[in-house]
Image (cartoon, rainbow, N blue to C red; front, top):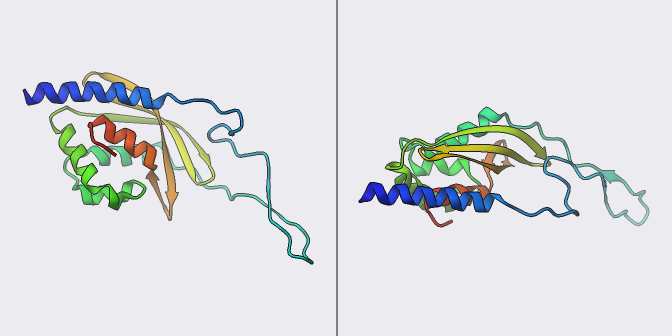
Length: 168
């Protein structure tokens, strides 16, 4: 009974993730990974000359680095408290990360293949092929540069939690 419940939960999760992965295009928003062609200007001091500033380039994370973070998030051998540093606002998500591990425990092995990393400012978006016992689903996930670490964004963390039928 428990095994059947987990399998149906994961199947529902894959459907939920596929639905969440679909988005809408906004013509006013630059494409992911494409910097805005408009420089930002700062308001001049009364006697100062206006200056133009650009967002500094951030070196992109490697696909292996991002993939490792996902593998660690679903690894049952890693305590949820240790996973908190892998996601934005992770300390507020420790219980959810523990529930994810429990939910996926009887499901089977989940693997990730990360490719096509695009960086825009301090965010990196990549295509992620999520593979489980019932197939593969390609989705986009985003990581944010927090200090020196790339952490899975809040929205992408919620998508991953949905895979284990865990509320965000």
